Amino acid sequence: MVLTSKHHDGFALWPSKEANESWGRPWNAASIGPRRDVLGELTDAVRNTGLKMGFYYSLMEWYNPVHQNNPDKYVADVMMPQFKDLVTRYKPSVIFSDGEWIKSDTAWRSTELLSWLYNESPVKDHVVVNDRWGKTTRKTHPSTYYTSEYGSGLSKNVVWEESRGMGQSYGYNRMEKLKDYKTSEELIIILTDIVSKGGNLLLDIGPAADGTIPVIMEDRLTGMGKWLEVNGEAIYGTNAWKHDRQWSAGKQPQIKGGEYQTDYDVNEWTKPSKEHAHIEMFFTEKEGSVFAIVPRYTPQLVIRDIRLKPGATVSIPGARRQPSWKQQGNNLVLDLKAFQPGDLPFSIFTVKMTGVQ
Image (cartoon, rainbow, N blue to C red):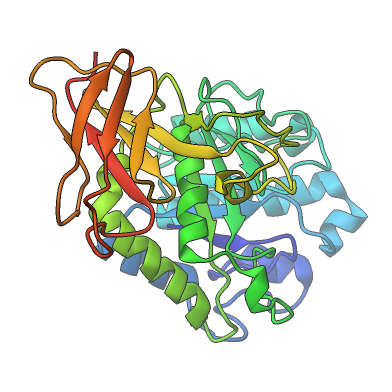
């Protein structure tokens, strides 16, 4: 769980004295509004479930009076002590830094700050940070995970994470309509696409003003959760396999990808089309098993370029019946013609293969 502890508006969700003092007015959730330590309460609740807690933290603040008058003073007297207070009080496992692009890492004094984090802070032995610590640090910082957002993701050769909302906004946006939200099935395909390329999905939820999760977001999360109860083995703790996806026959479409705010939508490429090939399945790997995550039912499933050893098994987790299968050269062929409606647990299903050569 990663909470926005402070966004670009500078409003802090914990009793931060730096927020109040630098703005010259109550500017944290303990002093105004809910008058509660929102961050502290949520951190305790999350950890009581056994999950780890992380914080998004914006280095910059759009209209902070101190920053507008003296940027160096803002860094020294507001940002740095506030960041240290956040870490010391709540001991996060993840720091998702942001708002870094307006200054160099030197101007933000990021080396000094991260040196404190990794050598002196109470989380020095286990904290993980992203790559947003100055306007030239994304995908260059040596000891972090890389980030993309609303994009086509990064390479499986690096450690990376994609962040996005369920709609077009990270926050709660009353102007968004039903058509702006991805369905649970579409979000599952997005998750699968990212994980098959070795990435992690940080899926954003924008609570309403009273802190409640909008029903449409609760519905999407519940749908994803039910799917993961059955298919989570193909997602959690997996690695990218030698192939991340398999295309159907035909010309593959020219996909205009990117890392930030692109119009890339992998769901469009899983739909059969007369004009171009489509993605038939995605792959992940864990502990000697290979998983093929299939977006839709087809009477015969051909998994190309895979050979199984004697004694290998092929199964569909959660299915009421199991497929017959055979090795044909370098391809594995599954016969699903006997499957009836309801035999598959979901429209998106997983094929688990053990004993892969």
